[in-house]
Image (cartoon, rainbow, N blue to C red; front, side, top):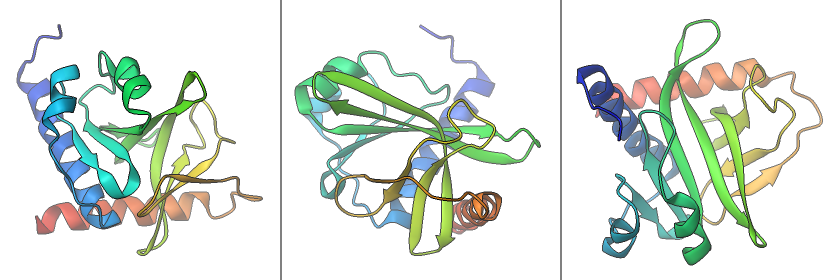
Length: 171
């Protein structure tokens, strides 16, 4: 178990704030599910409209997640505070989803906004899978999109980071 010192606790609090802010921006209603809490020890919420488990995480890791996803057949979205290569504060996300009998991880994702009503999770262009799929954040299951061009990549990330920062200040 990781020792939870003051900096780690601060990251946990920031991850929780980020998760609540993301849910509010997406229009998701968060529910605490006692049956999920019995399976893994994590601060998690169920989003029924997206069939998604939203998990804030200080370090991007959650023990016992794969068996939970095998059992529930829903997806999980982990959100963690971080910094871009340029040093700007942002949130990194990982989607963990069930594909047949496999569990697939899409990590190094960041919030991307074309307009306030169009929110996506997009691969960080400096991350492990810069050409990976985008995931639309909305009601319903996560929808994927493979863009033809990433010309607006950095503008979308700047829009999303500003949107998250502004929404967190209003909380």
